[in-house]
Length: 349
Ligand SMILES: Nc1ncnc2c1ncn2[C@@H]1O[C@H](COP(=O)(O)OP(=O)(O)OP(=O)(O)O)[C@@H](O)[C@H]1O
Image (cartoon, helix red, strand yellow):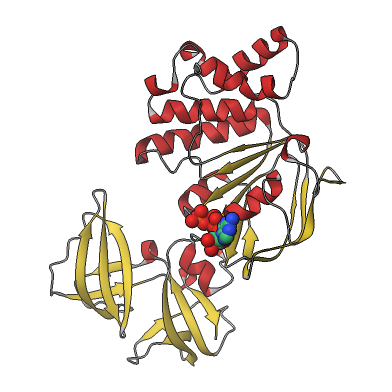
């Protein structure tokens, strides 16, 4: 276990500036997700921590010691990639032993004990003699994980390790990753563009936007209090609706472009131009005009199995609402929506 410090890391590829000054303190044993859209610089940052990429400026410290100029093998870090990169001609056992062999770690007996322990951790002890092609995608992924943890690294770097798995397997592996992390307590930096994955796995989420940290916090924090429009949109896929925040006899409200009023909590202090962030899952739909509901136009319904996603037009803005699949509203029918005032986030300006 080790703490990791990223010190004002900047990185350019020729004229392309990819990272604009990333500073981050990662506590020993912490599980951090780097979350962001494709191309925002997540992988580049991870490769810099691993030593596979140089910095343009700034540095990396592990346990208070600068590793900025150390090669990957001197950093005590293991990295697992999206493609598992298993060696096809070696057995599962030999794939996992590979890093120990390459770095001459331990005697043959010690290596054997470490490989067996790593395979047990990922529950693959019984498949040690198989070749990678004789395994399912999920099993191959576990071999890659065993290979990453076999040398007992101080820091584990995971670059979208679950993205090649189908939805069901992915959920299973998420649970396993949480359990393995708890058991081994490795400081872990996990790259993903999947907000649900980040929310379910991490102690802390670091949201990256175009090479900068947009926001960081615990999953609860980031989900409940996205600081910017970008964060709202990215986490929880909120709808962003422009509004004028005004006082009404019953308290503050968001006045939408068509004049409809959306009540806000009494504690809301913003006034004037703002954006309302409305979470898809917080929007309730009704077919009848009851008090406190707003009129919207139904554009389409997308059946998602357990849920429905309704695409609506609210005061000229397209919004999406995620509901249980028993809320059935006919296409073309008038729709009313409501949303609990305390669930609405007001973003200034
Ligand atoms: N070796 C390189 N040479 C030139 N440009 C690069 C290099 N590596 C990455 N880039 C560019 O840097 C930017 C950030 O890439 P990076 O792979 O870090 O993004 P990412 O957030 O991990 O995206 P993804 O989720 O798609 O992997 C991209 O515009 C990419 O094209």
